[in-house]
Image 1 (cartoon, rainbow over the protein chains, first blue to last red):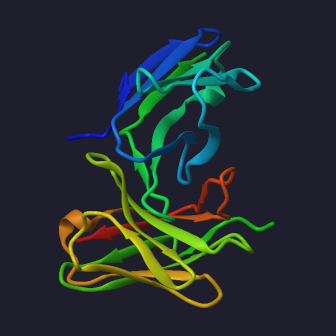
Image 2 (image 1 turned 120 degrees about the horizontal axis):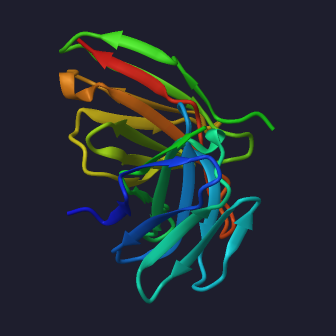
Length: 113
Length: 113
């Protein structure tokens, strides 16, 4: 079964709306949770979260981790058409010194003008 | 710093053939991970190499293999190609350390006919 589950799978909004993307996980050796934005090819890094309750912020994007609920949210305020992309959540499942990212299936966000 | 580079960017093969993909990590990064991305399964971890050694492996058949050279460049090989191997293959490099994370290359789009 999926270890990292994202919701919703797709979302269509209008410019200026605020959106909240969800990610829940279940892994044995949690190290961190990461958010990526994928527009065409390479996913680009947004945030890495390791501590519960501490919000990471970058411009209109912010994210927070809840280790008790095994979940994270990614908020985008005042959305723009350039925010249209697939947003990927990944959990770093550390085994020894190795790093292994387990990805959710992503949320496809479409922002219409 | 130059980013992660992958070659070739696009590849078309037929069933039964084999293919080799190449990845050059960010200068100074010693860890290279490979992922397969398909519409149905999302991003799935293939393997990770660090200092020429495979440190971790995902749940893929033995037809998928890889290696890493002393300059940290990595190759992955898929033998006896199947239609289901059609995917975007992404490579990511990691500089290690608690605050570091994975940075992705543009990917190689493999089509198996």
